[in-house]
Length: 511
Image (cartoon, rainbow, N blue to C red):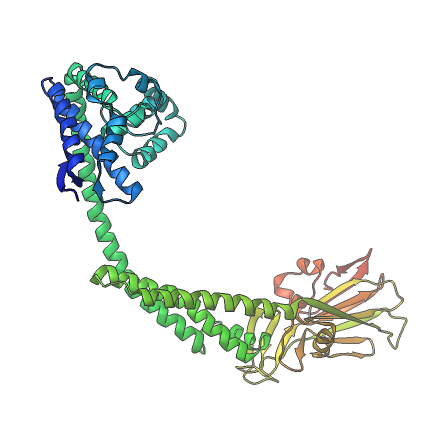
């Protein structure tokens, strides 16, 4: 059984057994007799004790011990050097071998942050070269200024004897500690006036930056409080507005477009999508409101609330992606059908025909018809919500190579598989009529059942060379370049075109 003592070594408390304590005390007293009589002896002994404390802490942590033993003190003396070897300067062989180099900021030789001096000590060169390099490369878009600031932040200061010697790659023993402190002390004595000037400059910049920091801190506090108030009020308003728009959209301007979505996807899937949109948009708003209230009222963070909110948000996002992919498959395939109709007139000698364009009667036939702004080729709905959907059918006039005009009706639709495509094509209801020399074409078509699958109808009227066509109706329904030559005031009037050189030409108006 051994006695143990608690000792204070370099402001660190250690539990040490009796033999180790006596040996350590004798070691330190011998060094004190040698160094304390010198001018810089106190600094040397302080760094020696600091290094001994670092070594003891390292041994205890490595071996998972709580009490310092005599074996630990022997290892410390073996690293630091015996008193006789130190006093007689016989430790040169141990100090000849270089130690491990580490990068620190050298605050003893610093002008601003000690970055350049630390790099110079690491590479054993003069700090002037490093400072010159920083100044020269600063003119290249200021890159070295940013590098200097980053290194100033991430590099630790060389404060202890261990750090100062590691910075230079020297072994950490008593001789090198003494050598380092003497060099530092002599350097300070030589440059006292310069160091005083540098210290005054440092103090000035420190005061300036502290003042600027306090100003920015106050400005940040004001803006953070302002943004927190905006976050609570604006977040709450947007939360209620989005919820209202998703579930009560009757009076919003784009309500007709909203209604058509019922027929692009099923009503049940559409309801699920509204819930997903509600979660994906409103959960971030809730977090903003919660964070703003936390900052203003110093509320405690609720980890459960955050985990539930983030979990629901991710779940809603994944579900939305899954449904979007699933619904997009309904438009993955395209099917097209073509019908050709040769228009043989009763009188084959005139070569003059009439095209009557029938527009959707918004007010006469369909009471309460709601016109759309051409969303997904949809031009009108018969009611809100719609039972019938009306889509535009563009008309093209091209040169024909048959003796008589020919009407080409091209229908297309999308679907997941072929039988879906055929069913969607059969859902198209388009009406047209020929009466002698007159061809009546609707500029619209409707869906038999309100299931939208990108149905389209394209009407191509081919006219033989030198044949004449009288167009009655709105010329905006004709998709060809000759319409550009028609004055805007006459687009709703009849006009006459003739096929010349493969292109329909507008005949001059008879006076």
